[in-house]
Length: 243
Image (cartoon, rainbow, N blue to C red):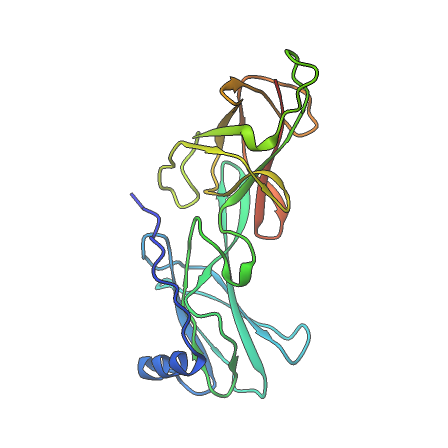
């Protein structure tokens, strides 16, 4: 059974140190190469590597990984490249396009060459503050309290419980998630949730809430939901909640 990799020390390293480490590891002039592995450290075949030519618009180099998770592409042109990687996964009839985590996301000069390795992560922060590898579970709370018309319900007192109804995207078993909501730029809820199909319930200060998918108005004590696409490689579940 696969398990999620643990995040290691992310202390920044200088470009000079990164270049030195790459040189000792076998960088070839004019060649971009590397390896992609899954959450269990095994090679990932068919991941898409995108070397973005930062001098010429829409001149990216795109190659897939082979059965050993490796790739190789010529970059011997007068340009600077930044490398990203994605992969597609289908679960419960839903297709997901996922960002892969770079071990080094520094740009490099094409003639110099570089090694850029990637790892599939289910959760954790993406580089440069670009969100998380997990999904969002956001809600709109009806702020009225039937028992106290003068009360105003606050999002921070909502607790969500998510019980996996399917394996996580890498096939590993998920865990029950029970967390207090936080406010985010996208709305109130939970961030960085491993993507799966979940049975969802909610409570407000210990009082059960009624739950519905956003704008569907079919409330129940709990519901089962899949993540859907919010932006490219970003997925969410949106809920309406009320007492």
